[in-house]
Length: 261
Image (cartoon, rainbow, N blue to C red; front, side, top):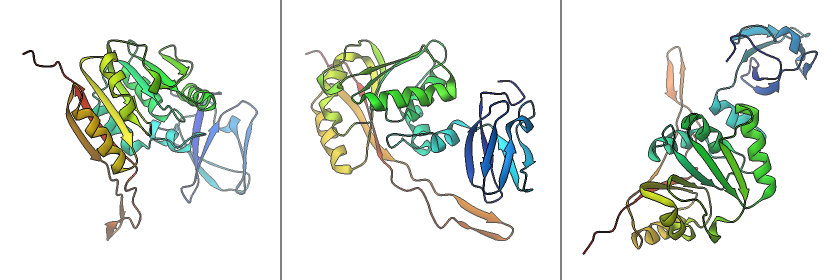
């Protein structure tokens, strides 16, 4: 990453009320808002973290978006998996550099982007997405943050009908009926490989866990992640009035080798 802000890269403009605007810098371009006009040329070639003023004197802080910030602000055609869940997913699925990962249900590409960054140059992601518009949106969002990435291959297909890949390290699912994938995943994963599923309701989780118990998967666990911020201002210290509570349940299981009789 170049120290100085470059034409073509995305930045966050944050105003005095902490409202965020995701902007792609273009030489000669300008950001227009109710607070005035801000020339992109006043940002290009300067350090991130600067504070600049619009034509109306309003202040904006300029930073490169973190991955979490980008996910919350990026264009989306489908609901994204939020950063509070993506972090635990990377740990629970033990996503490591060089892993070969299959992801199904790409949505807007939030998890895909995080996976590619965690996998390093030798890892790869194959994505199964049943909707071609979601597949295209996911690829565009990944490229907008990481640039064109040959480690990602997206196929428009229904994972419920089967998985072509074999010897995978990890399979990550954001699907309404992941229990349909369990037998396919058992054939596609290497022994010890991890299956992770993101589901919104506990009844779906119960159905998945029942299917896992009747398979060669074991060591199954289910958690949910609750995110509560804190308001800290002088002597006023209290939990925020609002929190990001339930978004989804994370279920993991490992493919085990059946005990020989």
